[in-house]
Length: 379
Image 1: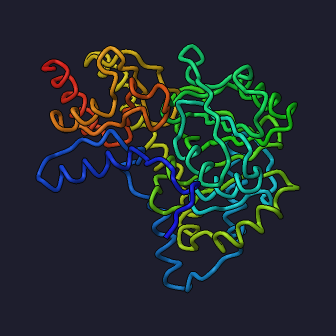
Image 2: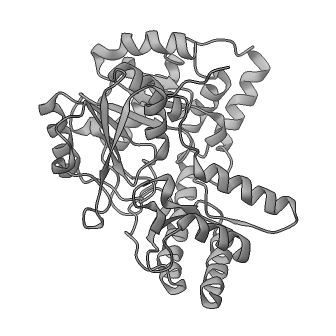
């Protein structure tokens, strides 16, 4: 049977690394996981309690396509608390993870054959989802001096959209308000669809992240309960869209997903009340970040852009290798530490970069750094 050309997307390499790490563990090895952006903490207690109560009283059938009204209101209230933004909950769309939000956003904004600009290094699934929809991703080769974030001069003249992420993956760097505003203004002047990926908001270590909604309403803002709220496997996210786009997105959501998972929405509503627990998690990441910023250079990984948020450090390893995938494999085999080659995030230059995640428990981070230092000393 034939396969479509648009279905021939690249593999998500970090998932391959995860499988190699799993196989090593199955063979009896103890692997330190620095490859995946997954919190080591469970969903908040309030989320689990809310779901347990709902299971006792409700069949948890379909919800409306845009999500539970109470959850949409809760997300709008979050924007008031975090950013001082007065958000109409009617503009909030609950989605099956941020991945579902990207599918809806790209379907609503772009036509087959369009060209959409995105920063490289950047989250690889943007590129692959666009390709699967017959939309052409255009990598903007961002620079260390701009902390791996795009600037207006990077945007080509022949694109129909722009995707930005702050904090970014893999860099963890953030756009300040003037920088984000400049990108939004440049997009508006050219009539581009503008998507702001804010999935790592809440995970900041000095100044907080700026939401595109603090600057204007002509953007698709995407977030999720996966990272700050420690709910990766629950597959529940959201996006905020311009008022006049809501019905278009609703029609797409009705047909693509019917609705987000009801059980996950109930848990997400509970998670919004778990501030103390979530802030305690963030304090752990802050400690891990400091350990990484001190320990990685001592181990020999010293060319990094210090992250403002998320839980990653992106390192230039060009002095060590021209094949980051092979180096990652060597580190897994000899040190028992799983790390991600940069090829996932930057196909053109990722052969000389690695991403290290510090999302795991502090003891794991300490052990991983010790193993990396021993590996480099013996190499």
